Amino acid sequence: MPAAAAAYLHPLAKATEVKHILGAGAYAARATELATGDDRSVGAENLEQMVHHATPVVVDVLKRFPAAPSGGGRIGGLIRMLDAELRSLTLTE
Image (tube, rainbow, N blue to C red; front, side, top):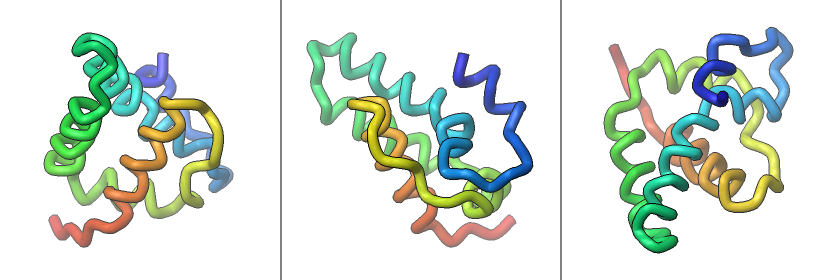
């Protein structure tokens, strides 16, 4: 569901919209953690790969929104980790 929702961002720059942008990645990272016995290092490695493959367009769109909100359990934590890493990038096309 998060992957399908990513195409439907609201025009208002609200922190909750960051979940639509990064949610699919966070859920994928969590799935890898669960598949490996809840190994959080695997999820972190998964996020690292996502950051490595991020395009300047993704980072540009993300930076139009406030930082990811608090809460959301482990998925929320993964979203915030991915959000922080992507925002720290300086990419050019």
